[in-house]
Figure (tube, rainbow over the protein chains, first blue to last red):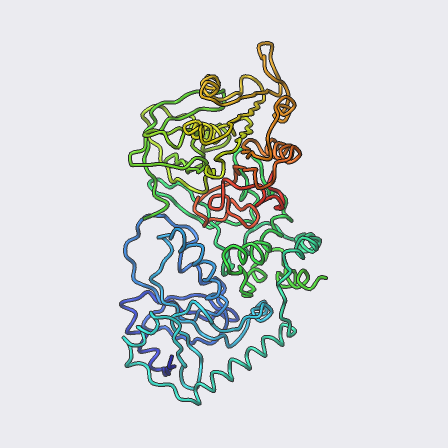
Length: 324
Length: 269
């Protein structure tokens, strides 16, 4: 589909126009990191940068929520979601929206992603063979070009949005398209170089995880089962269903917690911490690809950044994947 | 349709099976049916939910039965229920016993303790159409005579055509049947693994040694069916709790062919 251009001034005017009808979020810079902020009429923003501290997933469901029919909130627009987060939505949508559909997973969200222009020291999407821009699950994508953004369409909803707000966009010029490609290529190269130009072959990971379980013993030594890694993961989806006073409540749960798999009577298939640590890798790289068709890791590196035990999850993965 | 919404059920009657086990006869407010082996989530309002496989026949109309052992926070509260109280259910959930695969075969049910609950449902379902199966056998073990569930019903099942052998780990002076763990029943009972299927349900350790015994007797892994008890929470394959390797016990199970899960680490724990 034809790409569009929107100038910096027009993006500001567009968001101002959208604020009454949508709840809008964007990545706000906080020194060296980015957090999600609500867009106000006077918000200063840019879509430069890299993934936020917290993942995109919590816009689609809450870490803790009453499972009652909600008051109709305004639909949401999320600007500046990164490729790792939109990729993570594939598994989340497969789990939550299929067989049966979970009515509490929001479907009224427009994802307006943006290409990464910087990286967090823990980013490793390229090590998994992915790119630092959105390739799926976005409605519109914004790539920075001179004085504005090149806008690509990723869905019918995105195309409709462009049509409905046509006045803000203009046809993209070929030099803008070239500029976007060259930015993408050079930034991808930069990130690859930062990650040692490594692209892992994840084919035989199932047998390697078993064969090299010593790696998990070694790296799991400092794990304190705090569940940070699963909480901030772009695609961890587990929750616990509980009873509220008048309704069911769901809250995010973690396979890293000891009580997670315990059954009535006390039996627990994963009482051992190392088993839980290993289980998370197996789930992400073996079980979910086999059963849901989508992997559970997108290389955002939030698990490493959030780890209380200073475990470098990328290093663990590389160690197992490159073992003979 | 919200899969987390419950159907209210009235507690019609409560039967004390043992000191720790009760059977609840529940009448759903709305039309409800299940296939034998499927489970439900039973909600104790404001307390929590626990998964149970109904213990009554899938062909029984109206009220259905759930047998519950007191084993934790939710089941303790469930045991305080009285007739006319209300509970909630969600379901039916998960896979059922594949009855069509059992037709024309000798069906062996191997049960231990409260694991008899799903097997009772299967047994009653099989007996309802017993001409479809070559033979229906129940081998059942309990810790001691006082721990036997459905104690007054075994005779009637025999009369309806089931072959039944029982054992207890520790007999008392009145016990006239076998003594020993459940697998000792095979000492006196000859099976037909070539044209037979076996269904196992009980405590993990019993399921493990029961399954190994069946394999030793010549049952193919494809002919052994297990009801896997895991920590089902959502019951619809979303919350992740009941993982058995790559499978979710709530959706891909709870009834699994042993051949499907035999290589998964820790299934007996």
